[in-house]
Amino acid sequence: MKLVSARLLLLALPLTLGLAACGKKDDAGSGPATADAPLPKVAAPAGKAWTDVVNETADGGYVMGNPDAPIKVIEFGSLTCPHCGEFAEKGFPKLRDNYVSTGRVSLEFRNYVRDPFDTTLAMLTHCGTAESFFPLTEQVYANQKALFEGLQPVAKELEAAQPPAGKAFAVIGEKGGLVDFFAARGIARDQANACLAKSQTAEKLAMQTQTATEKYTITGTPTFIVNGKNVDVATWEQLEPILQRAGAR
Image (tube, rainbow, N blue to C red; front, side):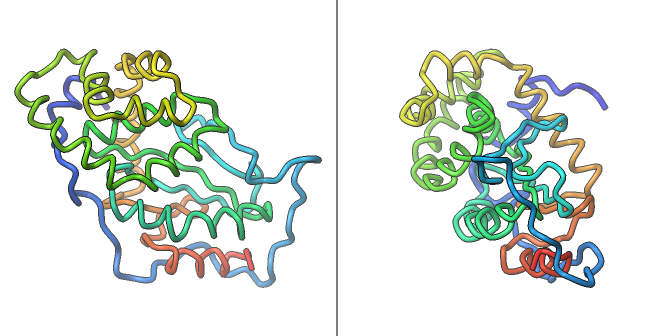
């Protein structure tokens, strides 16, 4: 697989905030074999809750919860996908509070970048500590509509100006109001601009997206992998029964 340059990423992906590669599946999906009995809860480390335990993974994501949880969920999400935003609002709190908190389920989030704006947002959510990743991602989804409004005018300007590869994401961050948005949430402006200047981060995100597409046959976001299998669902109503059948009940 060839390395995808930041410049190629910027030119190849659409400068739009639409529904391409962002959609819901209609079937109920499937998952691991049904467990005969509920899995036991696992106590968190002393003085902590499992929802406070977050670590970066070798595959470029961040995992929340018991690293040895018997049920491992990976979410591939796009920060510019409204369906992902819907899951973040309706499903993520229940997944976190009712399942990850028990130690029976871990949740890893991996960014699936669909466009340069998505990439810029992902670069900024990766800009802080491991502990800040999920709160920052939640904030992006909670404010998705307002962020879209700020980013829409930037598309024409980028297409006209064609900034150098090393400058493109910084331009999106400044012109689209993203640097200010993250500054209000603990990522200082200088820190944000330094992160957006690292084109290798964009290249890494693009490569991870390509790898995930090929490995898990991803056709839309959000996509959920449960214990290594693409369960082909995209909503909490579809995902929860799969977790319960696997023993998280």
